[in-house]
Structures are given as C-alpha cells and as structure tokens.
Length: 198
Image (cartoon, rainbow, N blue to C red; front, side, top):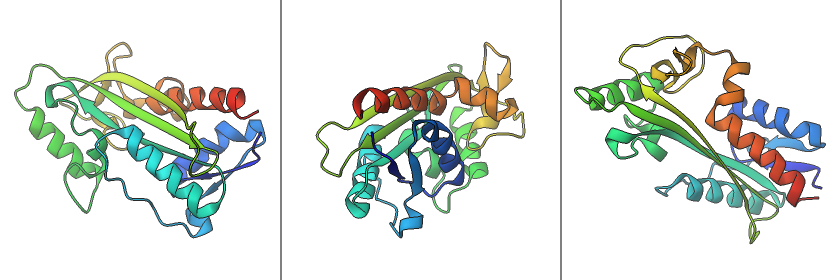
C-alpha cells in the first residue's frame, strides 16, 4: 500500500474530503500546490480524460502516486451541457452566480428539467500507470427555477433532489457526502485502492 499521494487540485474542500477518505488507510494526501506543481490543462470533452490528464501530470511532476477528479452538472435538455465546462459555463472569470444565471436562461421554457451531477475520480501509481483506478459517481435531480439553501457551492442552490424535496444547498455537508456524486465516487475509490494497491 502507498503511504503518500498527490491531490491534483488546490481546492481546500477537496483536500479535506480526500484526507477524510484516505487517512484511515494510512495514506497522507498532499496538494500539488504545496509541491509547487502548476495545474494541468483540461482540454478534453469528457470527465474521465480530464481527470486522467490531471492525475498523470501531478504524478509525473512529483514522482509520487496521484489522484484527481473532474465533475460537473449534466442537463438532459441541454444534451449533457454544461458538463466539463460547468465551472466556466458563463466564461471567465468564472463564478457560481454567473454560471447559474446562464443555466437558468438556457432552461427557460423547457419542460424537461432532469439533470445529474457527475464525478470521475482517477488515481495512478505513476504517470505512465497502465492501470489507472477509475471511480464514477452520479447524483440525479432536477434544475429548479427557484433558489434554496445556503450550503454547498456551484449549482447546488438550484439542484433539486425530488425524493428529498430539498435542494442540494439545503443539505448538511454530512448528508451531502453520503448521497452526492463525489461522495459515491470517493467511496468507490477507497475500495479500489484497498483492493488494487495492496
């Protein structure tokens, strides 16, 4: 089993989540920024390709195993958009408010409001690892017309979970981690690491 892994992100929330996931396995998570590694390009149109590119970049630059994720919201009526462009949907400089405004404008007059969050996490032992570990999580819901909740980030205030009758931004972090796309993908990744990297 490995004892240290580089997270190909400088996001503090992701860092905290990865530590909570991997520290019970005795794996120390370090951010790429703490090692002076610049963020990788994300030129691809799929979550898996972007995740793999980020993990390979961090592993090659650091010489350590690496883990990365790519995630976003996919809307049925928009043929999967915003998808990998979720964080930059309204253009640069990116921010949640503008992205949500654009999404609501695109959804105006549409009856099909089905959407899902997608998260793909990739882990590699080295940059040219022929067997990357891949974990995928999906969280189904709808794009609501009204904003609710103060928690979460991104599209959470407008992401309605019909079976709960709540928006993602109304959930506690603990509730969200159990049912969210990232929570599901992280649980799968933990199992994959235990099974594959003994």
